[in-house]
Amino acid sequence: MSQSLQMASHGEQQRALWLSTFAFTVCFAVWMIFSIIGIQISEQLGLNDTQFGLLIATPVLTGSLSRVFLGIWSDQFGGRKVMLLVMLCGAVATWMLTYATTYLQFLFAALCVGIAGGSFSVGVAYVSKWFPASKQGTALGIFGAGNIGSAVTKLLAPMVMVAAGWTMVAKVWAVGLAVTAILFFLFSKDDPQLEQRRRDGVKPVPFAEQMAPLKDLQVWRFSLYYFFVFGGFVALALWLPRYLIGAYGMDVGTAGMLAACYSIPASLFRVVGGWLSDRIGARRVMYWTFGVSVICTFLLAYPDTEYVVKGIHGELRFHLAIGVTMFTVLVFVLGFFMSLGKAAVYKHIPVYYPKHVGAVGGVVGMIGGLGGFILPIAFGALNDVVGIWSSCFMLLFVVVSSALVWMHFAIRRMERKHFPQLDKETDLPEAMDAARATQHRRA
Image 1: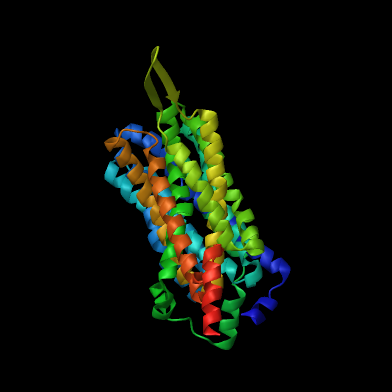
Image 2: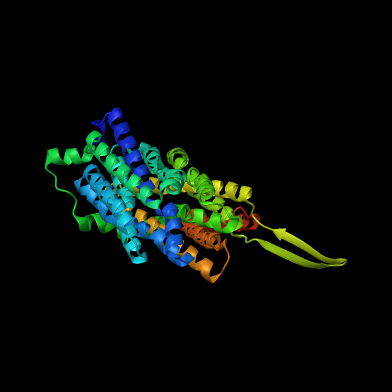
């Protein structure tokens, strides 16, 4: 691997990185298209919140399930060709979306559009092969910043939709994806490892061997992390426009713009997360991510509440609610730390599984993507059943708290395994005296 990497110049590395990042940005913009056009389609069909949640989440299902296979195929046949195929299929599906008229047809069309989301595992497998391990965190962080495609859709799609309807949004986005696919293929090159395999006549690693690391529980722990940091990001990116319209009575343009205040930091600062993971370690970044996210989701989960206290001189009334300004600040902070976490999770994969980046990255990406599918449906169902707008953040609080607990105890277990003396050492004076007495008797 090191020999093939030495053959790639700095210019070739940067070209592969930035072309992949641009392609992923456009793919992500298409993948999130229902966050905006879904609002008009919902009004057109008269959908309830559960049906709306299913509609906007359906593309995420395809993008998630396809990530395992696309990641493996990228390792086997090269990310350049697979990325071209993914983008062209996504462009055709997005254009065909304009012919749907019934709810079932929209669900099927959304399922097809979701292939654009599979571009992530393709890009991870492709980009990671251009850089040594010491720089992969930063490189993958830059590539992952393509999540900003969500903000592109939220800022531009409302204007196009208001001017020409949701069908024009789909057509413009489809053409943009097709053009990007052609440009990417024309200006990119096959990764160094693939070219080295061709020169040496080495066959691709078999599918069964690629899937072998999935027996490791650690892979599924990383998947839970990504279920929150990425699945939660996708879910909120899809749900926030609807949330802001319902909870604060905004119009679609304003809601889209404020939702972008979440999507932009949750995308761009992934670069910072990759850099920090290279500099101070991915584990520390994950602690920051989960700790701050627990606080943010707890505050955002608190519903608009009125308290009545029977005081000495009569009733005392208190009103607690998160205003628009505080809500925007909190989701900005939440998005920022989610972006750090997304990069930190993928910093682990090339380090622990250097020969199976496509398979492991695909599974972790799939579980994270499934979070983006499951959570919006759950958000809608909670709205219909519980009837509280902030119930979506209640669910996210439970998810991130579970991830934090599992991570902490897993790390403690690994520390005890490598340093068994930790179980015996303590800073309590009486315990230290007892240990010295025991050692004296043995002497």
